[in-house]
Image (tube, rainbow, N blue to C red; front, side):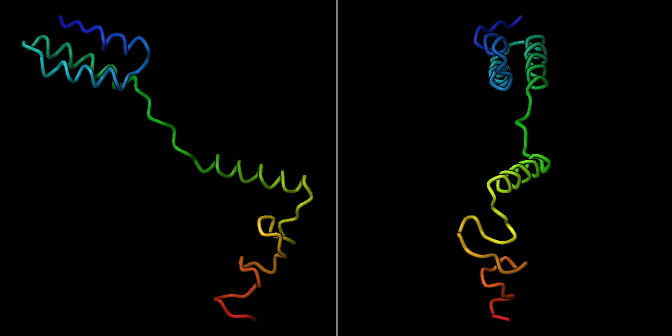
Length: 106
């Protein structure tokens, strides 16, 4: 069978993607069908064990927003009355500093 110290070392460290890539390189060097089957099997095992990076879920974003809101409340900053980043009064639901809609004053 095919034996590769580097690929097995990567597997032992849990670096599954890199190990799968290494087995892929060895697949090109395999001389018989039996070696190709073995290397393909090892590569597939490494790929199956590799985990995808976690993506941000909206639940996490909402939790961060809730924590920020609680912190502002604990600090005595009322988001309905002032814009904490600009130090200005909050004047409406439009998000504009003057409370106008579509760029003209009411």
